[in-house]
Length: 153
Image 1 (cartoon, helix red, strand yellow):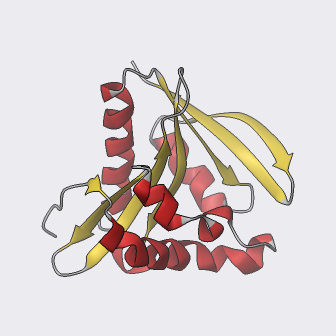
Image 2 (image 1 turned 90 degrees about the vertical axis):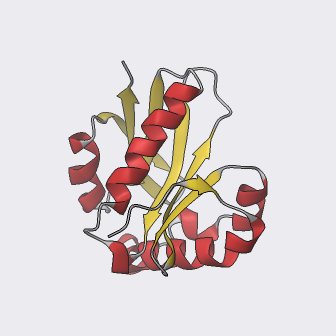
C-alpha cells in the first residue's frame, strides 16, 4: 500500500471523518451497551478547530484519523483514533500512533494521554505495544474507562 501522508482534516473531510469513526466504533455499541463517545462527537467543530488529522490510501479517501486535544500544558490528549475496518492490518493505526508521538514532541509536550472503554479489550492489547501504560480505571458516567499515558523521552 502506498504510504499516504497524515494531514489536517478540512471541511470537505467531515463526512468521511464521520463515516470512518462510525465504522470503527459501531461494532462496540452492542458490547459496551452505549454509543461510544467518538460516534457522538461534533466532527465539523473538531475539524474546524484543527483537532482532526486524517490519512488515506490510494483512491480510498480517509482510511484513518486521530482527534487530538492540545489544551493541556503537560500532555497531548488523544481523544480518538479510528481506522476503517477495510484498512485493518495495513499499518494505518501504527502510522497514526507514531504521528501522535511526533505531534506531541513538536509541541514540546512530554506525555500523551488517552482512555479506552474497558470493554474494548482489543485496545488494551494494542496500546501497551506502543509504550502506553495504565494509569487508572475509572467510571465516567455510562463509560467504564481505562486511562493510559505514554511518556516521551
